[in-house]
Amino acid sequence: MTFQVDTHRMGVNIASPAGASLAGLTHVALSVYQANSEVYGQGEPAGSLYIVEFGCVRVGRFTSDGRRYVVGFCFAGDVFGWESDVVHDFFAEAVEISGIRAVRPGRANDAPAKLLPLMLKSLRRFEQHLIVLRGTRVDERLAAFLCQLSERQDGESLVQLPMPRSDIGDYLGVSLETVSRILRRFKDRGIIRTPDTHSVEILDWQRLQNLCSA
Amino acid sequence: MTFQVDTHRMGVNIASPAGASLAGLTHVALSVYQANSEVYGQGEPAGSLYIVEFGCVRVGRFTSDGRRYVVGFCFAGDVFGWESDVVHDFFAEAVEISGIRAVRPGRANDAPAKLLPLMLKSLRRFEQHLIVLRGTRVDERLAAFLCQLSERQDGESLVQLPMPRSDIGDYLGVSLETVSRILRRFKDRGIIRTPDTHSVEILDWQRLQNLCSA
DNA sequence: CGGACTATTGAGAGCTTTCAAGTTGAGTGG
DNA sequence: CCACTCAACTTGAAAGCTCTCAATAGTCCG
Image 1 (cartoon, rainbow over the protein chains, first blue to last red):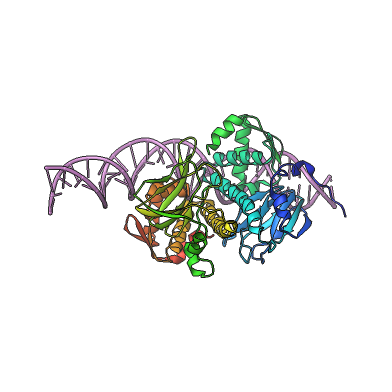
Image 2 (tube, chains in turn red, purple, blue, brown):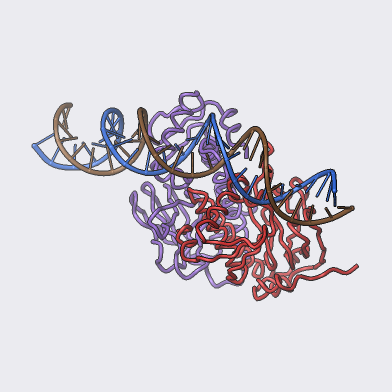
């Protein structure tokens, strides 16, 4: 079986130290996940790290009352899986067809030295999420989300949104309807354009960043 | 980047107490900070870690439009100030009179190995804040905040709140007036009692945790 | 061409914010 | 010890947002 590699997206983070660092300390196995398939489930035993080769992964969690929230999206070059102890407190699912390498940290002495920068990168993602969620109004949150997404996609004005609105809502802490409404408001104000449901073109960086105010 | 490490719970695990980890890689100097004095400012050069001996520290940040947000509170045993950049993106201030040790990471080869578990702890702390902020309604956020604070204070029912309402509001992403109002609502429902402004006694754990639903 | 899923849009209800008083409490000087 | 002063906290009312529920449109498959 063969699969098509989306080299367009791989370019995004290929320059990051992720690949090089991991080479020194891992046994690697590449798997391809179909859209909406599970990488690991909430409650399953943990132990590996995962690095995204291409595609997009959502990491999230269900609350005791059944609501869902998404703590992050991972694109090519991003590492996930350390948000857990012995058991996964979170789930991870492919948003679209994605290639993911499972990584077992080796016993080598220099393993921590190689993991450290990767973890710092993950901390950065968490920090950015905090900044997004801290926005009082939803348009701030969505604006910050779009800016960060663009930043992670080489600063392109045409931002890919592979995930459904419900994922975005669960990431931003608002309802999916509100996500849709705010996007419309941005469109009406000429800040963005939506060629299709899963892409957003940023037309007015100035006003978008004014909304972020991070 | 700044984050906090919850070493409070590490005391349980004799195998890797925080003190020992830090002892291996630090030069230590104790300073006492008066209430509302600055440990470091946003924009200042970074380079040290700090461990709280006693008191309480708030770590936060100002947005470009002048609003403030608080990313965390540090109590005795917590570590903060671990900057990945050359410059502090955050500020740190003593909430009340506090004793703080400045820690310079050494050049030893095993430094990364000692820092790694601390970073993992910091990831956990970030997750907790995310969980708090993700709550849609404010009573969820405040309930989660009180539960986590109690957990960090040996599970006592009488929780100390050394920080002003404005700090809590900036941490939870709501106005200080709303913090006050929600506290009143909890009091009226018999969930908590407030012996004085800076302490809260949890009377009904069941209902408080139902509100969290994390 | 259906059928199922996702996205958009609308209307009323419920919450939170902002602005603006009051009230309490800690610290200071008489 | 008491009154004064300032800052923090509480409370109220109106305005603005977001949520929920519900209906309509759009899209991707078979």
